[in-house]
Image (cartoon, rainbow, N blue to C red):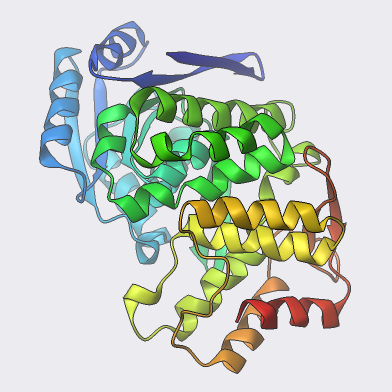
Length: 367
């Protein structure tokens, strides 16, 4: 199964591969490269899958070099990007060399940023391995690292020529990792397509059981919705901003928890924070109580958190930090943070959050 789209007269493909991985070899053989590949992978990915990918790369007749990473947020920094670039310099890579990354959002960001910077742009391919990256961050071209405690503050726009979604990777995902991708799908349904919301409700049992055909449908519906918003607005001037729905609060929640955390088990997955962030932004808009109720019902259906009441943290300190980080959000262009006001499904609107009292009430409600 393939999705194809164009940006700036260039063609890009997303493949959903059920069993055979030969598509990767075919694509590599057709590429006008210098036959050098840097294979970057997260060490947490099963050795069996890594070995299968490596074999496909070798079958293409390319020289394959490997770098192993731990895809944690603490490694999403300049030091990691320079490590990749230094390695490529040492091996004589050119702009016709290939970078293939296999990992989640962190590794995808790091490798794409390095590929965009080295020789002003290389051939880049990606295999997403977390549910959040599979249904969202694997496409769109955003690359970034965190700097000075600001999420994604240094980055570029650089698209993967090919993205390969592997059914066997999804099958191997731990339950929490798998389910935490659902809020990104929910986001696409809310800002674009009621059918996605109905799909999440009506097919929930099959989705939770990882039925291959249903999961493929889930992924492709989400990615098509995302393409709709970014293909004519890559640099996020207008329509693409709608994809940030829920993320203004989500990023602030993530940063505040990370600052106050005592136990790593209390950290939220990015998708879990997005689910709570969606509810916060719907509450701030306070226009459609039925929509808020429906959103909570879908999150509950997948046992996803709708608040932070389960955390054993200082509530006042957490509240203060969430509020503070809202105003450091990179999407802010004036005094106030921007958010997506959604009054009805499929009709998102960019607005500013100017009511400090309402912001604090909403934060207090989730604590």
